[in-house]
Amino acid sequence: MSAWVLPDHIADVLPSEARHIEEIRRDLLDMARCYGYELVIPPLLEHLESLLSGTGKALDLQTFKLVDQLSGRMMGLRADSTPQVARIDAHLLNRVGVTRLCYCGPVLHTRPSGPHATREPLQFGAEIYGHSGLEADLEVLTLALDCAKAANVSAVRVDMADARIVHALLRGAWLDPATLAQVHAALAAKDASELKSLCRNAPTHVSDALQSLVTLYGDEHMLQDAQRALPALPEIQDALVQLKWLSRHLEHPSVSFDLADLRGYAYYSGAMFSLYAPGASDALARGGRYDEVGLVFGRKRPAVGFSLDVKSVAAVAAERPLRAAIRAPWGEGSALRTAIGALRQGGETVVCVLPGHESEVDEFQCDRELSQVAGQWVVKTI
Image (spheres, rainbow, N blue to C red):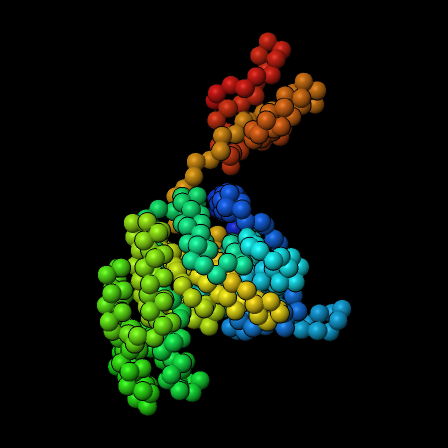
């Protein structure tokens, strides 16, 4: 085997793709800034107990672990930035009011999320702390859609759920942890017969409601069916009302609901959403409310946010035209150097052709060139 073969699901990013990813990354950060989100840059490496505390425990199997040669303590390479941002909000900023934060950086996964997924996503996310109302949920969902638009992703579909529904039903089921895990898997697979078997010792109304969940997906009209089919528990009824409110205020042409969706069930505490787009094998973005995320850091307060992998977004985003560039000769003359410097300061890309390389392929596909005309350096169309 070649020494230069990379690990499975790890890949180099070559110039054209890297340029596309970087342009999207900048547009996403600019969009978040337009909403008032402040950029933070958490470290790639942290003490393991910090990364995996609280809700971060769900990330244990996805986290690469190593020993710190300075302290001898166990450390981890982050698999998700959200616990880190919660720590920043709780311990470093410690603001009383609303805090809006965003981030963009690599995360590492021990296992890929799918057959063609990378183990080194470039994670972008935005989170708002300090407001428990639906206004924050709506803002984050709207920002996620605007980010998809900024990345030139079209025909985006929103799928919504609420973690409180399943939590409320299972709270009265009195199932052991192993059976609960099987119930979660059966709900995700929409296997009503398996759910019936697993819940045979649970109260009848719980078993019936869980089996009903697998059929409760569709447009907003389905929420009315859910109100009739599910127990009239306050937590469930509030969740259904709030999902309807979010959908109507979002005013997006393609919104659906899947009340059995349990992805991230251990993480979220309220409304959840996923964004899908043609050509993507999985959700482009996931988000929702996770009010428990700061508890382990000693500061439980409302939180809602979303994250996405910029690489996955770039794979389905419309191609962007190359930024126009100028080809210039290499030379020692001060007039030529001054002309090139002025163009670059003005925001132009100027590629100097080194001696002997005039016929090589131009990665930037220059559409103009810097030429000397009557003793003056001028830009001419090629």
